Image 1 (tube, rainbow over the protein chains, first blue to last red):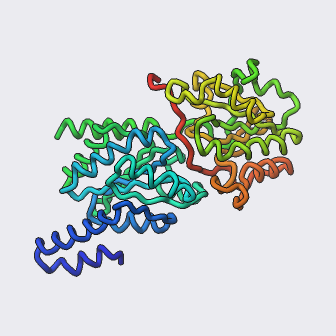
Image 2 (cartoon, rainbow over the protein chains, first blue to last red):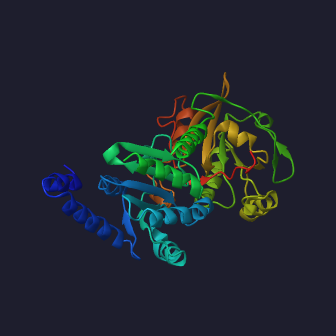
Image 3 (spheres, chains in turn red, yellow):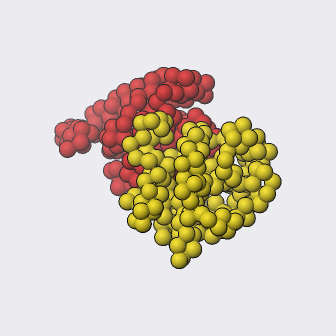
Length: 178
Length: 202
């Protein structure tokens, strides 16, 4: 049983408000970790991280500092992160920069662009080992975005550059399903 | 709500339209006539003695392409004499990526001493026909009764960051298999790369 599900069961008998507070704390602590820190992780850890958001529309954007369409698109995800702060929507920015460039490129980029969403760096030099596991339709080109809402069985994948309107109406439509 | 739903459906439709098309392993690939950095036009039919080709969609600007540049040069050095020359093709729209203009291709090829053709797919017709999506993106072709049969599609090896740490050199293994009359054990792989800069209007 996954950790968040355990919490759900445990708290299902208590009041709804208690649960909401608890979730808020849980989510807030997850967001707070983003502060200037970038976790370097392997794919199985990323999968676990994605799976840990069981009650949330999780927007996972694969990007890199060297990818110009990604850099153009990042502000939209930042906007989503702010705009849906009060909803169960979270943005996770997965950098595909080389681990060796974390200090020299990634951290200065995050600071320079004042990124507030959580950033992790995926340390997997062999794309073939994980690309299909993100989505079989992914060719490996970035930007690419995975949208997951486990509680509603949503898992959508897009190998494309979003406009703000596109990503916003997509998130809207997912929230409105609630 | 209706407006949103329509927008959402349009998005889904757009996503499915951009889904992968192009060649699969076993398909016959088309030839091309593209301008080389030396000003001449190059086609695969010009290489009468070749047993096949290592067609690489690549470019000047992409860090992943640059990470693989030396390995692409090494592939040509190792396999051109064995009948599998490299043909590099830059499909990027220079309007979106000025570093990938024809003039800059000429510069890069000179600077690095490319011993293989570096062709400009100005209309992007070839990248589209092959189904290339990123740089670098390899199509290993073999001359068979079918024509130019696609034998392998994908990455050069399994470690973009460190050539020395690569455990499997996919393209080399595929050519070695073809040379001994076998099908490549791994005929397609995926890799991270820079998305091809398609012309905005198309």
